[in-house]
Length: 147
Image (cartoon, rainbow, N blue to C red):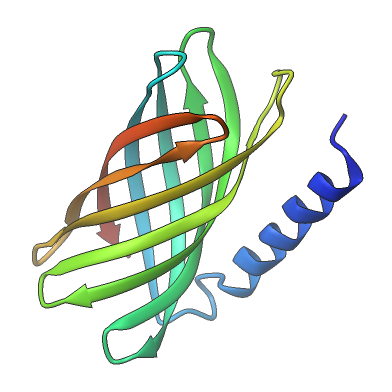
């Protein structure tokens, strides 16, 4: 069972993502991600939907939510992240933070933070993310498709 403070954090994060929902955002994206968690050595795969709105000329704020699958043993969950992204021509740099819920696990609520960077083409973006999930480091790749 989650402690009350942890549950409040999850609810507030979900609310923040809902406020940045694609229906109210200036852009919507579908994302695919694959990560390697350093300890224990397992994989994480995500399918996410993100929405964001501009804050300034090259700065956007938004959120993403989706489905998560962890390997070894197989577990599923929901990644929820708030995102701040800066665009520099075709390149981007972003910071992500939020709770990831992993079901059927003793540690249901996990804290995620990451730094992503990548390049946009005409029809998609490809990038890397370096971060942490609870007490372990993670390295990942992302493919983003605007909707």
